[in-house]
Length: 294
Length: 294
Image (cartoon, rainbow over all chains, first blue to last red; front, side, top):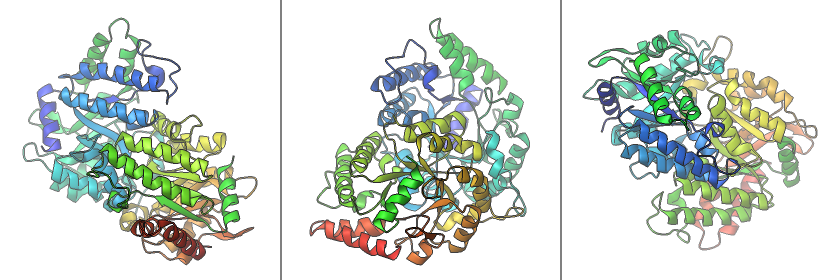
């Protein structure tokens, strides 16, 4: 498998690049699933999260190409949270959904190797198709992840320009000839080119670029013509569809070049109408947002 | 509790700032503990790691103030790894050892909140005294962690200048008036001052600065006079004791201003002489390194 080829192949089939973020905020879990105190480390809370997410995942089959679980919201449940996430990732595979783990890991040498082994190796308990990573520690800290793109066909999304208000504190600061986020993009250019897929021309080394920073997206695209963009910030975080797909370009299946994530704008409507039929609310949200970014 | 006051108080009592990194590399676990295949997700592997680390922790009581588990090496064991880490953190508490979790987390808004809840809240399954975090996403991404320094007396070590060879790729790049790592230090200055402890004058908002980058350490210290330094890279990564404590300054208990971490230089000698008495090897390594950075 080549991650980018596989992902873009599925996006072409479905006709939209929508990615559903699996962010189980405890205060949003529908009452049908809630048990006991809902304190994070209560075992009943993990059960509730698992049951809720399992129903959502089942409904996503054939509707989206890819799901992005936010590992922080599972870690807050303690070790049981990772156990739940492992079950849910298996369920995604059984439903033919690709999984991008939003973990934003970053560490050095043998420690980075530990993270890569934990999430990208074939025999990992929680093995996923791609992972998000943080570039602050430099190129050598990304090596174990990049190696697994070559050797195991995995994918990577490196944080370049994040969607939060404070992302400018560091990422927008000017260096001698560019900004910090542009320097990160330049640091990735060689590997990005090397990891291009034979079928689609897209690379398994992708980047995270917030939907709400259009001009920055252009500058990243200039430097990384083959990188898939993982675009957060669409919908609930305020950016519109045109902004979200700004760095996409004409491809064989229409405009393409990444995936657009939505978590709250899909999950919350479904949560709020759980009793009266979450399926319709989930489908509607996917149809509406998928159409918008098509 | 105020983290910095507590930590420095213990360092003064012991007379050295040595922190022991708990990095259970599977290929180094002594044969006395090894079971079965030692594949990462095999339950027997987690048992071996737990038994090994428990013996090390027991031996650290009254010898060091603080232990730094590297969570990546537990995550590679799957959810059982976090279960083991939870048991080991409890054991550290019972042995009166402070715990700095080396997790290098960093995310935005409600996700950062999830990480802070997972590791710094009083009712967290894996609650520790302090955590390492990544500044690439900007000041707002650090807020949930900083809040818990104020409200729960926790501590924080923000990556500023890491010890790996590639740390210069981004961190040493020049901005308009400073480098990236100096900009990070400046971003932390107000919070650092605000979180100073009443007893020692040191702040619970600390920084990670590699022992092998002495000049950079000076520049960080200029900008953050009250920050505790968590110093990796001493011993196995090549830096000497004088470099490691370079940013420390005269305090009531001798030179102080942080903790110097050593993982491999303490654990490996103990691993290699396990059969013939690891206790002596561990004690010797601690005595030798502790003396060096005293």
